[in-house]
Length: 302
Image 1: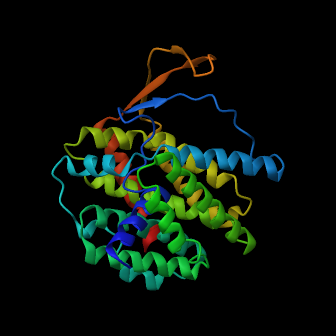
Image 2 (image 1 turned 120 degrees about the vertical axis):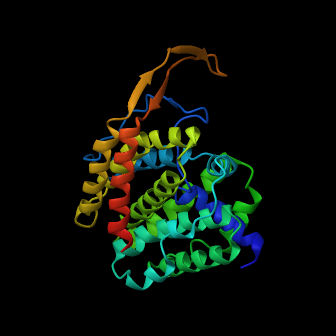
């Protein structure tokens, strides 16, 4: 794969696998309060899929731009640390669908990290590992040259990239559903999110902006748990969901401060009522998050 295609593929991974850290809210660290009506996952299949799509959209749309993520990591003068990554040699021990799916997401996030630091040799290793797991899961043909070309053409348009990512996710989801393993796509996203949070935490010291992003994962985690709960085959997802719920209990200590409610009019003249929230995290809570995510990550990459 050429350097251009490698960078373009990695840009896709930044959006699909959760990148370095998928923060919620605006780039100023404020969380935008929404009033989207939730659809119960206990409804008919069509309603459940609709609810799942809304949850996926919320997760994807809160991912910051790649340049912002690179800036957050590198602003503290952080250096590349190979020891933070999941060793590509571990791939030989991933035998089950769950192991392969979660670690496809993990290797995707690691690929983003190596490319951000321009470690081309390591990037190729992680690209190879991600492609191998995709092949073993039967979806290698979905992330192909035509997809990479679409990403390259739209790399500066976040809305277009989000549409591409959304389309790709549902193509993966449809393929997995056809093969009787629809929940695998959710595990890929979760694996990327876990690794993303791990990498962000590893560089948080002295980086207030990154610390804010980590605190905001309170919201992304809620959405991930809802996403996992929306799938019928809970036998494969139950343990993963329980682990995330344990982490959710830690994030419950993150403080939420409501800001002033504001009213405005949209382009059609309709009155819109909105509000913002800020989140703060104590040193004690951060330490608990560090401990919890380390235990979860270790469990699933072994």
